[in-house]
Amino acid sequence: MKCPHCQSQKTIKNGKHHHQDGKAMQNYLCKGCGKRYSERIGTPMSRLRTPASVVSLALKMRSEGMGIRASGRVLEKSHVSIMRWEQKLATQSQQWSPDAPAGGDITVEGDEVYTRVGENLPPLRVKRMDSDIH
Ligand SMILES: [Zn+2]
Image 1 (tube, rainbow, N blue to C red):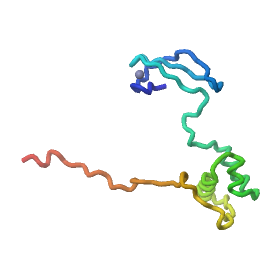
Image 2: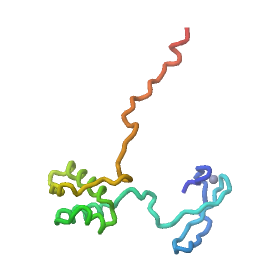
Image 3: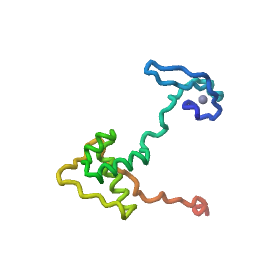
Image 4: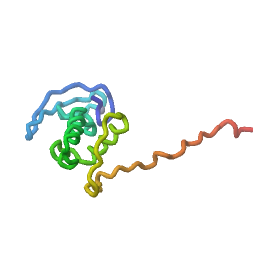
């Protein structure tokens, strides 16, 4: 557990305490900067990843004829996520061939629009410093 203040790895566990919401927090003491901090226990480090079991359940629901929004509501996932999983699996596996969703049912909500900015910039040209010396 790296220190959030100085990024030092020299941290020690320093007891636990419980929040009012019942979640346990692990306290840490940083030996690098002497600061204390705490980390919520039991919370995944990355909340972006969805367990494969949830993905396969979603695809199973879809293959059983459930609507994409209904599947999303049951799994508490956005229907946009489910669409992405379908597309991803459609390209990865020839066996998975989802039926085309009914036209007009799909809208992309503003906060879920997937944007990729600046990924196609050309690599920086590296100057040869010594070639300018005469
Ligand atoms: Zn520190």
